[in-house]
Image (cartoon, rainbow, N blue to C red; front, side, top):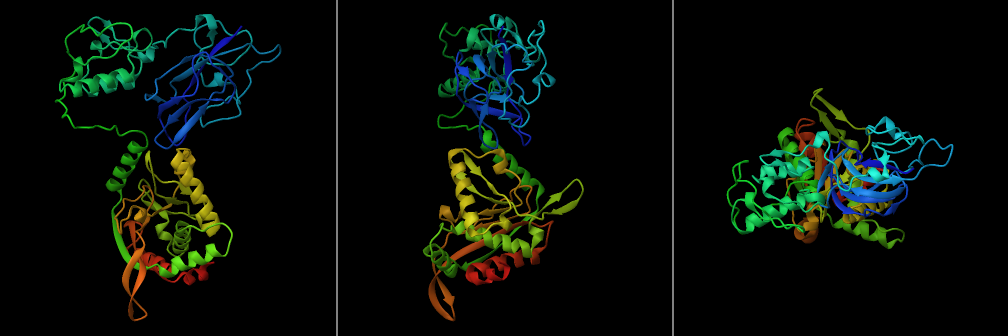
Length: 460
């Protein structure tokens, strides 16, 4: 006899507690194989395809596209056929994300729904006969619908309730568009947009329904209605990548006493050296790779800047390796991919890794591991056509090197005025890990290498 297994949103690693459903890859009734991706989600770190550890038929999906689910919330249910005689377990998944998988019996981590135990020994959460599978998501004891004067409101998601509460929206005024009138996040957002467009409080906004018109069943008695939103006002939730960036930058400003120093440098010889390298054949060397190589050489001389501050222990922790982050602007916002062990890479290896990570960032394919573990950041804001900046340090690192645009400028070269390729370099550093002398020495060494690339030969 087939069993219905519940697959929950797994722990995606790096302390992430929730994810937004971007796109469902399966429909109810579809047949899925072990390790087949069933949904694309976006976390505060990256876009992730979530594979299902079971093979069978999808009997239910939980969550609409655009809604957020906490880790551990039901994602889908799958009807799994009985195993062959003598097989004590269902086939295991080999594609394991952090926090889930079927290499061991999942019964150790999942609570069995009150029902007769499975005779075939399949270890699964909430195993029930297919015939008993609900047509719509059930409301568990931990997800009770809020009670109102006229009975419970059909809401499962605590995120939907919070969104309504924070915007003064009375859920008793809405008719959901989900199964059996379930109120979805899309319903609440539509009601808020409709109220904003009409210049009135959101509590009485209409919601489109396929089965019945909206009926005002009770007066608004919840939170006071917010002030009307102006016609041209646009609100963007701070969530996903944008929310993660906001949280990290705010924390950096709160915790790190930063300072910035800068210097102009003549990059003419560096540009000539790159041209000569690429003319010699072989893989092309990027300018970013040369700047990264200069950074790792400078950090070898001034290791204080390749560190972090452990506030709890009141200690400066100096790293023995350089994981070099670089700022990349994407359609999803600013991300900082990390080149692992950059100190051990040459210019060709750095160029290839920068290209790989940049393409992954552009397509949204970066993994959480690609975005964590950095010890120093290189920020090439010159690509935006600006000369200088005082960037915020990428917490919990201790420093960031900024590079402006390289443009022709008048410059005194060998005692005469000439037109040279000039760049502004800036270093923002945590003043707790070093004083200005160390920061100035680091920046001066970087500028010397930019002006005279042969200086690097001493460290190769």
